[in-house]
Length: 346
Image (tube, rainbow, N blue to C red):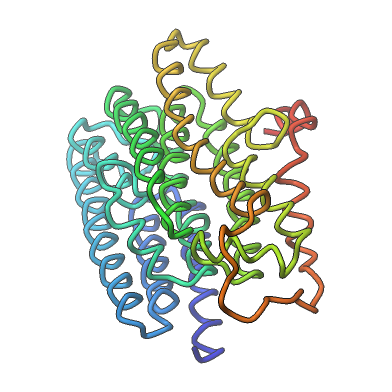
């Protein structure tokens, strides 16, 4: 891809995200979402592989539909209330349409079908952008409109996302698809708490972004795309693979690691809201996700391939590990003891 085109796409991504997260007017938020969509499409289809082109078309169609629904919803609201302010979303039909549009943008169940396919057709760096940065503007809109959203609808979508994200990830061998279903599952945790404690949703999203960025950058360094390749990638950078196991367990939400913090706080908040049954269901569903994270961790470090590989041995990579990966790995595994400080700042 031409460096100038790449630079323009990345700057447009930053511009679109900044416009959406800093706007109070529906038209500005919609403009930012459109800039984002148009900026990421060249990055998805840059390899010109048929799968990449297919992913770009799917992404464009879904995002265009979601943007049209955002516009439609804001116009209905403005028509009935005379307000274009994002925080003044009061009309029930507008609320329903907006929830649907944001669910499509994020990939919440039942609007999740596009996400694993698009991630599978993209490179690892583009998949990282799609899983983290592209989710930020829609989550900001959910944050701003959280007081007027329908609790029953959001809770249903959240539990369905946690269930389907865990269930569908079980039989995958492609790592990008596994991480896509992991993203859908985490979005379920974010959506369930957005009405009761919006700041907690943002904290969950930040920590999810941190851990997912670490996983994607590590996989990009070792050039790992599927489970069989992961089994032999330990010979390249053994230490990096060992830390990848810890980050994957953190993403699963195991207690001594960073990923446990958002789950713990969400369960605590749901219990305070007298939603113990919901908290129990979503906690049980996270065990499905734990299974495939454990499988990934097992493949990355603990197990050896059952038979000798018939290709040339992969020797250690000479270049030193990226400093950014080292910092992100430390943060992804060691932030739990600092949770009182994180909660004070949040």
